[in-house]
View 1 (tube, rainbow, N blue to C red):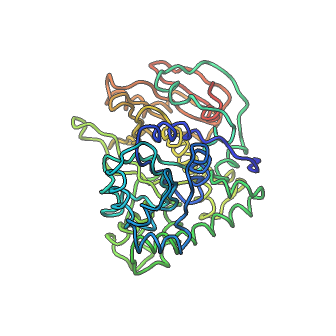
View 2: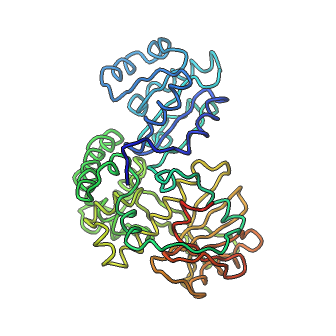
View 3: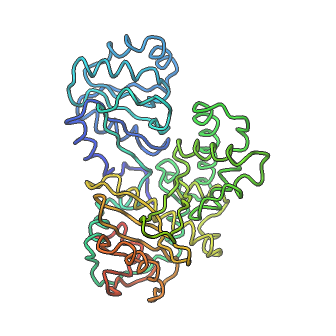
Length: 415
């Protein structure tokens, strides 16, 4: 994969729409996911000036006199890594309330500022939030995706493609961080990911909270990587440490705030009492997960169990990336009942329509692979739009009842 050029970011259109009618727009997401590049690419075209709070002098000046700092800013300003100066938010509110014009401030943040107590309260009703993820495969391919629209419409056509095989494992192991993908050797990418985790834990996690056992964080992340795509199990995560389950719970929350982990809530309806209501755990990116586990594409091909779990996380994160720039609000869940029927990913669109995706690492699909999706359809009733089993095969085909077998590469090749 050639990462020497800038890839299209499909969130750019949504960013420009937000700046056209909202005083403050926040791009938040993990460090090195491309927030600054996107902000500068769009902002400079629209006449924004750029300021970064990674500059300690600038951050110190803003912290010492936030009102004066904001008053001295030009007409339109990009404020990068704004979570480093939480005292700035009330000053931004005052400036916006004095002159409420669209597109005054474009903010970026690497920690989830909405989860930092009282940090974003003052900008409620004045700010739109856009989540930027690492690169999606369709962005790497330079092709605007239609997968979600085709899925909810149940409109997959019968077609054949070449299966990916080992190339799929390479995509999973590479992940989506632009700086990692610029390193063409898998060993060099793994080193970048490990350094990234170390810096993030020592810098952003330390900034967010005073914790007693900072050294436990990398090991906790490694355990979480081994649990990716499984139900959250705090007992297993806390086992190797002299830490209580509530403490580990707090640590997991911190890692969510810096976008390293994500919990996928269960989908359920009140009448379905037999549904499991425990969330699933996913790493924020499979490149990070593979680096933590010390596995490259060759190792994944040999360990099919690990590959299956990481592939599920890979597909989940791809769909999350697609949804982040989709014009409809799409919420994510998983489905599991007490009889063992499950669907890896359940998406709810417009608060009503449901679509399910099951992920398989194999090259074949049988009718038995749709049992979970049929259970979901039964529970969702008329809300169910369609379901798909994504697999590493050659054929896209209908299995009836709005259920389809679809090659995984349709995520970035659907036309």
